[in-house]
Length: 209
Image (cartoon, rainbow, N blue to C red; front, side, top):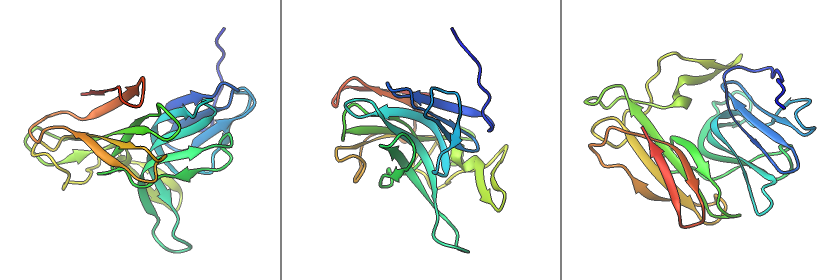
């Protein structure tokens, strides 16, 4: 049996559920969490945009969100943006950010063990012959009212790849403290990475478009 539940946000992107029933969801505006089986959803204390919600750990009771996160630098200063993974080990009550995933543009993740994780990164070009990349988080900007959505926005034009398209896979073996880029697309490739799935620490598949 399926039921519907309204959530006070816009453009829902992804969701994950732990075995105990904790639900995390991502959207274009906020991250939200339910700890009562989906009866009520509350805004999580983490600021950013993620298209990839996951559970991880030996019991799959921990939460992980892959994307771009805003970190406050104090009153009146511009916040930093960190491209990486936001993790929670207490049902979404508190969140911790990993180190930056190279070369940023973090999009999707796979978590085959407690400390070994993979992140697929990428941008897509506006054309096959221009170095004009787009990424989901580049369509967002932070202002006094919160996040706003830009219908068209250019990303980092210094990204690798003559085509303006780029894909990479990065790996951590220490729970996000450090990352190593283990695979990249060729310079002439016109593709970027989407989802990634791992059956073990050494066997993964990443898809591209």
